[in-house]
Image (cartoon, rainbow, N blue to C red; front, top):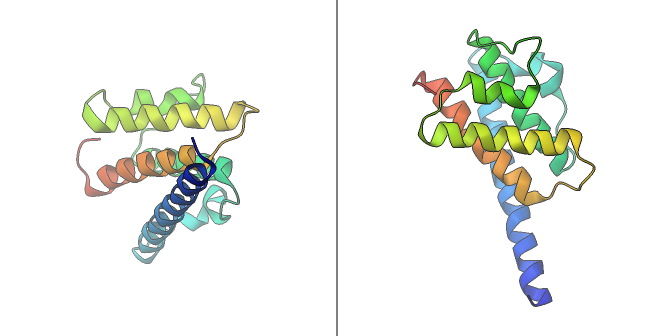
Length: 139
């Protein structure tokens, strides 16, 4: 692949992460205006500085949303298995939950670099799950 194509792909991925993160921050801001204040959680206070932190923050957001709905993780449960258990196996939500859990495990436990593509995928999965949770539809 020519260098210019790689540079273009990188710019597009970075732009997508920026757009998704801005959308996510708007949703968090709207939630705080509605009185649910996700900023009260230590996990939601700091803006992620790199793709790895974006993946971890996306997972933490869904974890907090599930907990607020009464679906807490079990003490014996690994964090990355939590969304798979908490969200029923059906359609896009299940795929989004498993994608987010897989990326979380990679970001949390791996020493490999996390790129903007992974961050974009995590934000997209988190946004889809958050949307379903906020509308009250079955996740």
